[in-house]
Image 1 (spheres, rainbow, N blue to C red):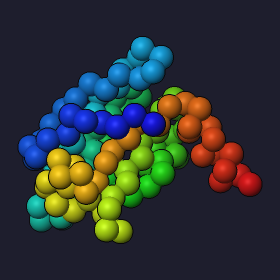
Image 2 (cartoon, one colour):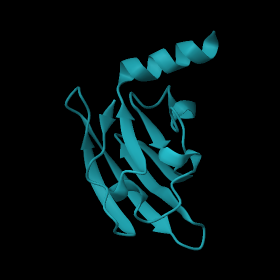
Image 3 (cartoon, rainbow, N blue to C red):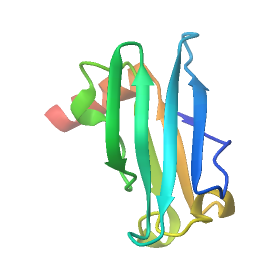
Length: 113
């Protein structure tokens, strides 16, 4: 699990995230004050594009795409609440992690038990 450290308080941001195998993916995030939440506007990996996903506390928000993506995204927050404030990632209240392929598989096996 690798923490995404580059998330700022900016309401719109785009980043290129490296994976352990040398490949990268692009992620565009935005904060929507009227919804009190952070959203993934888009994830691009190769020819795969995912649009419009709310960031929620989850061991793998991308689990349903496990056959298309060799990585996952986990969000963990303190205080048992979703990331709802614009400063949640910079304050450390919420953390977004990239899961490696082995971690995605381990989570899938856990769910299958």
